[in-house]
Length: 486
Ligand code: FAD
Image (cartoon, rainbow, N blue to C red; front, side):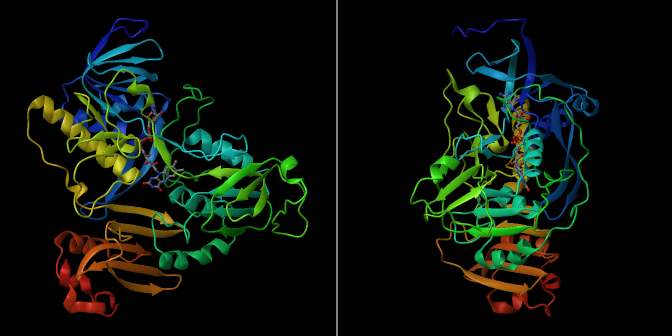
């Protein structure tokens, strides 16, 4: 097969990992531990990589951890058998087991793990639309915020939610297609619990600075490949502050119909919805599906991501999953021999455990990166391994509006088709605990605030113990349920 690539001398590695995000770095680190005598290569398009630090186990399936950005070379300090190539993968020949970079290099592998992450979906290519994915896009966002009086955020996931909370000193219009905010993560009750936080003027830096920062003058990879995706602390160190009073307006059950230039709204018959009495002309306008037209300084697109598979597809026979990720089996293998995938770029194709499902999150990128390393090593070493326990239960820890949030199992009644009961404990401004129950057995839970229930609830979901006899007392604060079930 003629690949049309300039051939420099080919380097050979036992393992090649593509991507310097959480999945790729975790994969390389675990390969180093499992196979210290093997030659491992990490190809990363950007000069900074992600490193997981301060890992603190919260439950059997859930760790809390910080993520630092580090110069890519530092990986070699901790893992001497790992070589880092700062380059972009342009093409893969899966039959020959060779990967080609845009820098004209080629690498042969025995096992390849693709951890190239995902890119934000954009509502439009207009210059008025921005997104946040990596350090560079977060810095660009910061510089636009400082001159803005009003921004429009579209999307209802974790990134949109954090942005609405973190940005202060300007008007925010939040456009969501669901009935209530943050619907990908919480239910209407929890949204109600968190809603008052939106009306508060945010105090300076709510979170301590967790991430050691490195700055790069210019991303070497250019505009075509993004750096590693940011995580929960994407806003730390950024000044996301305008100079007027913060005001959040939510438009629910709508989408953006059209993006309009000022000239378009000067037409007769166009009515503009105003939020204050003296509104001048805005740089851009947005028409919503409910007919309202709002002006703003710019639009933030936070409507999800698309896996970065394109540089690997030409000439190969990959099967892609529902969301366009590389479909992987229970050993993290794609449909091409000796090619594995982990993190945001993959879509699990195995029959999932009853209480697990994929969400493109930091936690899962780390878990998959580590498990993919085990799978690659076991295949070369001809060792048998079993699926990692973390895939038994969906678990995620995050912070929304300054509250600790823990999500376990089918926390939003996923897959249950509405056939479940809810047990609730709610103390305004303090905690919100929701359990999803089917026939007296716990299927999922949402814990907001310092509840310290995560370990007990994880056990109850994993054990599927019949809790019918406790009824609503399960959440009675006077009953110390941890003593019963731990
Ligand atoms: P990425 O981190 O995207 O890494 C991909 C890597 O591959 C990058 O280094 C990239 O440069 C490289 N690459 C891509 N293409 C090529 C190529 N052709 N050649 C060479 N290298 C290439 N998750 C949470 O769990 N909690 C949160 O609170 C949270 N908040 C977030 C906030 C923001 C603003 C964003 C953007 C994401 C957030 N996430 C959060 C999601 C989380 O960051 C991602 O799920 C996770 O980082 C994915 O890791 P990854 O390693 O799969 O991919």
